[in-house]
Length: 337
Image 1 (cartoon, one colour):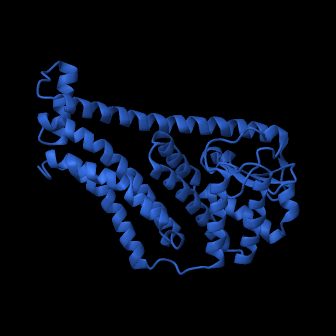
Image 2 (cartoon, rainbow, N blue to C red; image 1 turned 135 degrees about the vertical axis):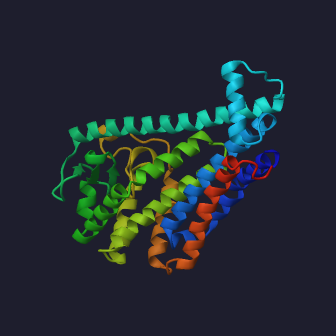
Image 3 (cartoon, rainbow, N blue to C red; image 1 turned 45 degrees about the vertical axis):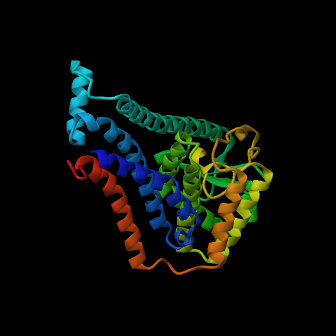
């Protein structure tokens, strides 16, 4: 297991630094946002697994020829007071670090979910008091505010799309339809789950610059995915105008946070309604939302052909390889000795 731990460490470093930086600067994700989204998920999962696995394998190396044997020996030490003399200081340190990092990641994931759900619950309570049903259909409500605001609040059967008076007055019927399709795409494709995972990853490892890059890229990609759904029934000109009008709502206040509050394509001013103030949570800053809007509009104004099937297949194969490599190194006995 000696070489396994070092290979896992190298893989963790590569996936934590150069790979995310290169992917965040690449142009092709805009051509195939779904494929790029899968790649970001594979990088995050494989990176975390490699990081924890490297420390775990190194720590178990003196007491087992493979991961299973090492874990059994460790269990005997912990549960049955077996001798621990085989473990040196750095092995115990590595095992402790692996356990702490695992606990930290899981705890942060659960804590982020709790905070998001608590905020969404509070948001629904305020909407019940301050919003009125929309004529656009079930699951859509309207708040009284002059700025153009549109966002969705996930919650299963309680999911709701929120529009402002200002938005409905500013949009033509086809533009409003494009906004609603876009928001419903976020809900139907469950983009909030992706945002939750990447927000938790960033909060767990805020010192790692690539967690910020990953979250920003994922936010941009889900907007592109929702745009693609809207383009199935609406024209590009209609969607571009709708995006521009909704984005102008950011002039009234800070941008809403997709990652933590469930807000999607549009922006929601902090003062959108006196009763809705103070609902902003850590996430994308206004400048980040502006960059996302620019990327979306540029993509629509200068469309490029979708990534060729062969290239998409290569990326998907890379995703599988990223997940399979650390898994195989961990579970296949004596793979590298």
